[in-house]
Image (tube, rainbow, N blue to C red; front, top):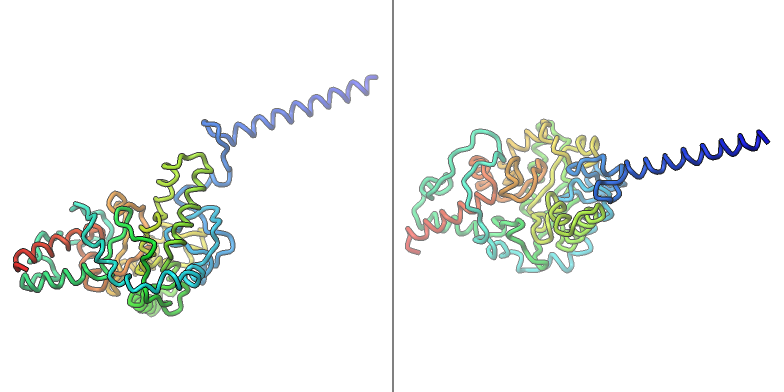
Length: 358
């Protein structure tokens, strides 16, 4: 009898301990609003999303990391090559893409004048007249107008952001692979990137790799929706989820990767260390080399530090945009965002046009 009572007492104790454990577990992994928290995901900072499992970060192949750069639990394990191979027939053969830049080049310009700190120190004052601008200071009004208008009408000037989007029919028609890379880019930008990475290797920086280039509208749309859904699953509203997704991942039509003129360039040791493109890249010698030399090859650091209010995107020390050597040098020297630089060019062109009575 005593043995049976002892057994019942021990059984009750085990049941009580199990119940307490369940209650504590629910309390630990439940937010104040009652939604469940994924402990693995909650322990990782939003800005440090990882690449999808299985992506080959050393060679630049595998999961596309551009814009999506820091994606956690990425369910879209496609490569940039698969995007372009599948979609080239419908996305990249259009002859209208050559003039797409002129369609938006004068719209949505921001009225700014601040230095967002997106380049190295030593920036100069932003000119208010074409007569004071380094690229047109020695030109007549007619020459300055022609020079500025030619650039603003070209595909290399295209301004793309959340306010200036392109349609699903926009696609560069001359996509090629930069030498030794796995992601396509517009042919002139691809040649410039090849030359830049070659020069970096000659200077001892062979660790720099192109992690993403051209991406189709359909691919961008898919990635943005996947990221948004992740935040919806975490309890965010639709608007909040889209805003969170848009901090790093451009909504479809607002990604520079859609043009073939953008390149995500990073150190493989950074990606291998963290599993994603990380801001700490800007502490490396490779980044310092890029910051110093990218303009020589026509590239600008597109999303600078402390420039989020202007560009609409968080700091990305790996994202470089091709605009041509002359304008890249001028933009980087001024230390302003491309939004500000583009707006400045439009004003200077209009001033030169008025002076020339064109």
